[in-house]
Length: 233
Image (cartoon, rainbow, N blue to C red; front, side, top):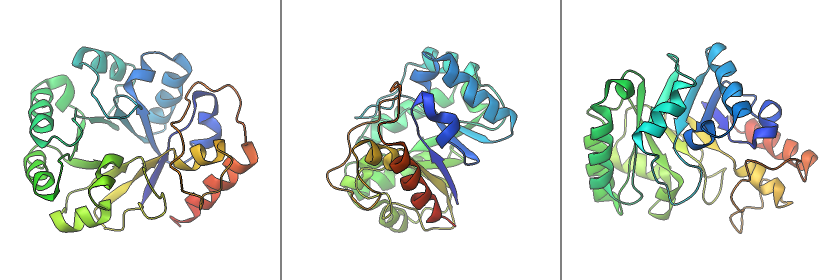
């Protein structure tokens, strides 16, 4: 199973050392070092997944902005996350379908984020997205409904999928199905920046500061990441 670590711009080379990468279009538009790092990863034939904004609640970038951002990285291993609206399966399917109608979008591997406010709505969204998305995803907001592993089991998801970020416990939210491609998270770094170990999950750590200049707890960050990545071996 693959793991993508989300890290501040100044620490990408230090902490994003796996063979699976995840970035945000809004930061690609803003930061040349950020763009350069993920361009290099694509040149190394690593998969790079491009989401929209790091802030919650999730919201999509406008199509033109997203396409400009991904144009900096355009390459075959690029995975593009289609737009989604938290807890709304209808708006998510409508937006994702619209974006998929553009050749610039569907020429890449498209990732559909399953949304809904309950299992029934998640199932409706899943069944719609699976018709045109080769890869699916569940964002951390889905944890408010049910543990994502249980959601995948209840929906009977057999297509490749990823978990985006972590809201509660990064260990409990590691996908277990053979269909899972992997998980994407900044949680171990955020914990360290709050001066907490990987097992100190409450309260949920504050959002990641992508523009922080120095790591406030470098040794703890390294230890958290090592302990987390060991879980996948």
